[in-house]
Image 1 (cartoon, rainbow, N blue to C red):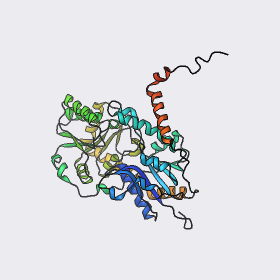
Image 2: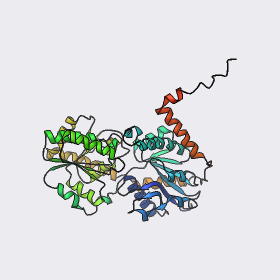
Image 3: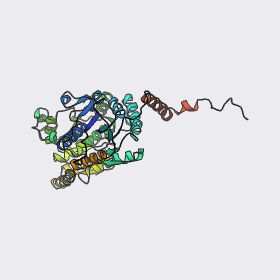
Length: 408
């Protein structure tokens, strides 16, 4: 930001600011950097966790408050009323893409989310011409933006500040697990792409064949995915595996205590845009085993142990190799320490401010011309495309448009 240039306001807009949520933590971190650099910066949302509401403004307050000289950092996930409002406002837009899970993961589990993810991935393309700059929070997400047709892209790295894990540990929940048993842990929302069933299968083999004094701690909200949770619990009952604990959403203080009691972090997720809990485990010095899919290898950056098979017998052997050998565990932790140091060495603040300066150097952006029924027509197009993909017989049943015209 040059000294002679007028100072734009740099605001953020996102659907919801969640407590302990990776996107929410990043938005708060961005705001701290912007305010420290002298920018006026607010966070506009549709909804916020009650514990964070005082840090936000309602998205409708953007109308009249955002001008052509301002910059909107738009965190895009599934699409929302906040997103669509931001689209129609003046101001230069920086889109930050956190990835949308492919909808096929939710078929048979959460039909509404199938539609939301499908439409969200399509709606993202509407911002190609609206955004001055599109940023992924990982190389994986940047590549997806580029493949969709965004011209000017970059990477705003996720560099967690771990403030939420530096608070005094609340051991009321974790205290029962600090009893000499081996604690295998995974942190993530209980949704199908995280592949909790693969974590459970590997743990079942590990507990059955290698270590009867072990338990599995699964930390994360299952709200909205009760059907998937019931499927997982049914699988556990069929396997006859004891000591599998679904702990739900926990506070930051409880999460800190759970990491303190964990002996191994096991991830089997098949789709991640970054996966912050992997880095949290690095920070808390818990050895990590993770399935090498999507952004996970780049996130781990040579730290921990990657595996490329879902064979639970093989994964259980890896678990034993790490947990039963202090030398192996020390080597794994050393690799994670080095990867974490590389990540923390990235200049997040400088990178963010350089992106802001680059966008601010461009001309002001008036409000785009948006027809009153733009989004209505967009939704109609989306529904037709959904039918084209998932119900192609509907189109094959239509009469030939040339039928009845005769042949000249």
